[in-house]
Length: 479
Image 1 (tube, one colour):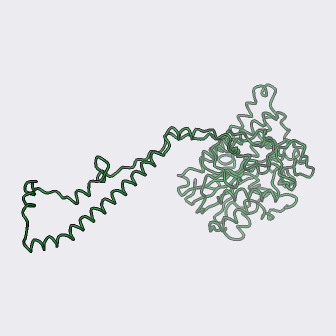
Image 2 (cartoon, one colour; image 1 turned 90 degrees about the vertical axis):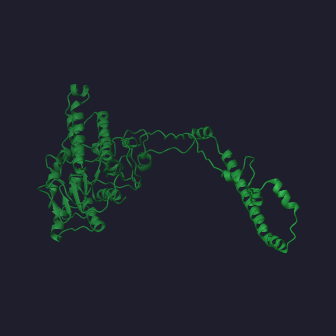
Image 3 (cartoon, one colour; image 1 turned 90 degrees about the horizontal axis):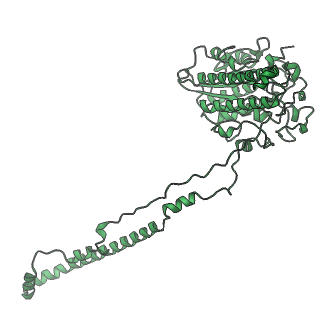
């Protein structure tokens, strides 16, 4: 059967992973208050004004200081000077005295202008609001302003149920890209090595439309790899090797070739989060030297097969375990997150990647459009082999917690996550399959022209689904 089970690549596992994708409520940000107000001080030049506020420079210029006494001045004035030379000297000195008077007049006009400017500045300072009035203005109620939209309302408008329970990204501190297809925590540039990790969504799988391993040009990883060749000037390797790298080995259930040129692929069908460092040891396979001195870009999908384990444990739990709150289920959920945290810690270690590394990963999707209706895809039960977990409330709580943790890991590691879960909701079998059922209560409605993004296996993307994943990763890569 060409191993269609594909290691159980989750279907029921994620059946309810987004049973309630939706808009989470978020309080409007409160306006910040300004402490005190600006204070402007305009110093005046003391040389321009005397104690009365009027200039004294003009009188000093016209009547310069003289050391003679009044009596001496009077005697000199009383004695006429009748010599021709004295008259000539007096006439010669008149222009100089006129120039001194003119200079003193100009000085007085400049002083008057400076005084007027200073007065205007003082009036401007007096006109400024007092600090208390600024504080009162900042504290004014702005609740009548436009409502602040949540991330879900802004980026996932097709999630129509405002009461649906889903990931509360608004509380994560994440920076969302303008494209709304993922986060924007990294400036990705100068890439010298591209590495793909993860599960069958990354490897690529056969379906009725593309049965052969060589029919792979629509795989999201191959389309993105071709883009990075031109974006960063990377080497694809020899044509034959590049062709094998893009393909898969149905018997080994992984890529037909791990490395070609500046590209590596260590993803594996059925892989879980513990296969990065344990199990398949994908990190060791792709980085045999424990890292790389090349500036590296790592991309992966993971989580679907992990969630299968959640569903299995939940459906197999006894009544006593159910009454105790499903401790085994929560232990498995915590293990998933722990493995992912360890993986991101390994990948972002600057000692392993001294010239830098960028990481983009996706949260896991599901095919029931948030309803949990596995019967919407007839192949689901056959391929998964897992009995549905009937405790939808607990399943919803666990899936929401895991989705929140995926985002928290992206924030704490300053890597990027694409919204595969949210983008695929509304393109599953309930809303867009061969027998759509809009009355099933899906919180997602992508519109009348929406098409299904899953193939007949229920859990793997078809060509349109691969195109959607490619668009998500590329948007995050380019911004």
